[in-house]
Image 1 (cartoon, helix red, strand yellow):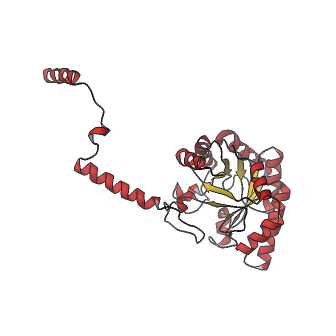
Image 2 (cartoon, helix red, strand yellow):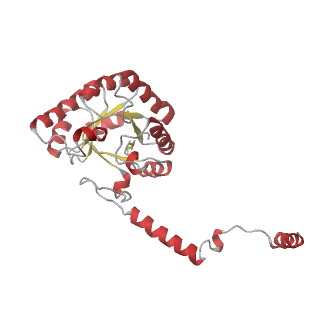
Image 3 (spheres, helix red, strand yellow):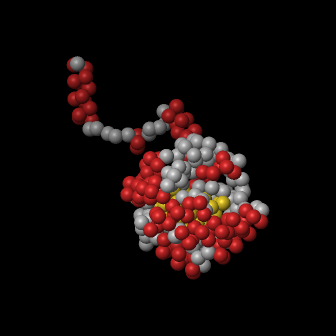
Length: 281
């Protein structure tokens, strides 16, 4: 059954946990969808894990549309949420609405996500008023990494924690159907989760959130540039890929691959005729 914003709402009401992962391509999205994942985020984290940038700042709208449309084609049941990248919504509410609409029309998104609290509530409201579901994102917001002075945990002081709680209430009031809580103390995330009626999706925010999300390359052991504390590796696909590549190279070098079963055939009679023609030529 196709997941929706109403599915997420009901899961929170029923006390059922929401599972989300990131994906950036058709094949991975299809596998996640078949496994029954509730939601797939096409995050601007693709800047790190797919494009090799140091942060998410260089990611463009076209990047999000290209990768997002691939995921949308692979995910038939999961709720597909696509990030609005840096400077695609901050300039004005009109810009935010236009680009949110592009993600829906050109990339097949079921919802969009943007970073920020009270400062982006006007954007959330205008987008949701146009009939586009919005997932908010507060706490450690990667697009603000230069303001934070790095990827630093947020909400550790009384004042900062209170601001996060207020931001969560503000994005709910503005119309967000869910909010990602990233890189904040678990006790603060618990207060937020119990203070609002929309689902909280945690990433480095503890177990009391209504759901969790991880970058798939982190959980599969495929991205090694840095590993946040909150990551758990559920498989070592990266190591297995390296082993498979080494085996492939060895078999190519030894002439073992391609084996007879990997090759196409032609009838002996036709081959005999071809050889005669080649010899004549």
